[in-house]
Length: 256
Image (cartoon, rainbow, N blue to C red; front, top):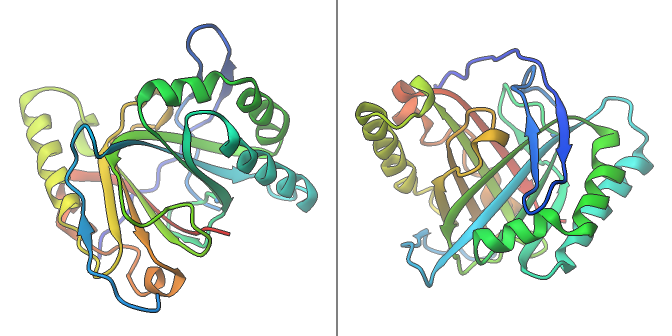
């Protein structure tokens, strides 16, 4: 079994609204504890300029004891951001389940044609209002990971779809020296080959390191439904990269 490390750090939330860039900056956080009728062939989509999309995943831990009405208002505010120009797909809601060291309670996943479209979303007044007015007041912990992945034939925002998100933190910090690049390429190769029987896969290297708490490799598996998602163990495939991974976050989500 793949063993997850238990990281204990402190967290700081700060929102910067300078133009032209916007960023959510967080110091390392204190822990990760609690946010088909047919069987289609698994498909790993090859990335190209015409097939790639930008994946944006936000994991949130809601403060214990938060009034349910405030949690619902936060989720509704996040889902309303799907109407922003440039957003291809967006869904937000409570997690179905997570790994043994993961405490997040909610997730937002959205897609964009390009990094510029994601940047436009980040600075959009509706996004800023939702984050400052609804998300931050109920949030104890948060992390954000962005990567360039692959388009899939399954819609990750379709009601009832099952999503599995994996974030990997590599040993040695995932830097740019030769050995670390070699390890990163090896891990990406293993992630690419994680064929879980059903679903489709988008994967890549995080390009927002300041918001990802040291996690550098991300993947999103999309399943037609909850049944197919739950049929695959949360730690499936991770043992193959265990020697190179310091920590891993795995969460499951069903689109409401």
